[in-house]
Length: 315
Ligand SMILES: Nc1nc2c(ncn2[C@@H]2O[C@H](COP(=O)(O)OP(=O)(O)OP(=O)(O)O)[C@@H](O)[C@H]2O)c(=O)[nH]1
Ligand SMILES: [Mg+2]
Image 1 (spheres, helix red, strand yellow):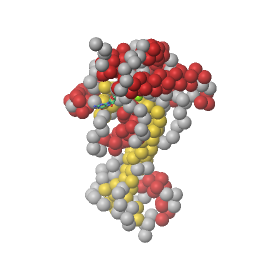
Image 2 (image 1 turned 45 degrees about the vertical axis):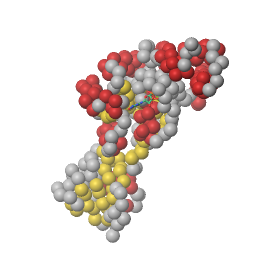
Image 3 (image 1 turned 90 degrees about the horizontal axis):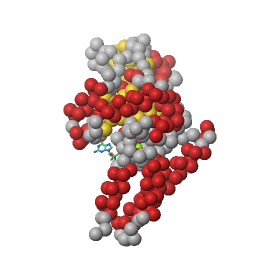
Image 4 (image 1 turned 120 degrees about the horizontal axis):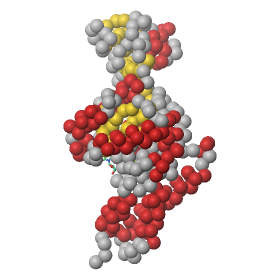
């Protein structure tokens, strides 16, 4: 009785788990040599494996031959901060990138899906952060993967790290493995924690992740309503900024979020919105924590708080 294509796929996935890309390439090449002659779904599966093998070979070539200028791990910084996603294989790093940035990077129930960094911009109004989805940290030791130098380069260059933990697996073990490898690199940076698979395990597991975070902000995937904003606020907190909303008092349309330095005044915000706005401002009204009451009239020197909404009237 031949093995069904489904069982064959499960077997290959199980064998690939935790393997480095080089080991996985060897494994898949071996399977393709012995591939059954059956048609239909076996042929589909074969095509899938061939695509994967081609990708693994390409990455091997790129990494073997890269020069400083085309190093895929050397990412040009854009936006307010460059944040790298760090996690063990198959925990949901690329899913997080896609959810935050709308990128359409490949997500698969397969370890080492990502072999070179995927980059996207996470935007919230006028606040933009660069998110770099890295290939996985290995389950074992850093030197087990051929791209260890790239991981180190990306982590050392990043503004800070976002550690991604699969809540269906052992949280503590994942944290220990990642911390050990980050310490080995000397990448002792501020972090935000993201627990994935909250839809499977429930919010209590996410709350338990807080105990491991040592005070780091913690969020979950799938993202909940309003979580993009909360994540952007946490990112801003790490770089000493707050998010305030500016609303056009004439159009009364949706407010636009801006990141301003902590302690910034209305004047600072006005300059950020438009270089001429501060000079033309006639009246300012504020809603939120810095206002004594909703819609309080304030001067340009009024110091803003996180989450304030500001209207700057020019006539
Ligand atoms: N239900 C559920 N599935 C998720 C979640 N996050 C990720 N997944 C699934 O987990 C699998 C792995 O997700 P990826 O985003 O590719 O994981 P990764 O960490 O980028 O994987 P590598 O690049 O291989 O290290 C995919 O099948 C995803 O659909 C989640 O929050 N909930
Ligand atoms: Mg990935």
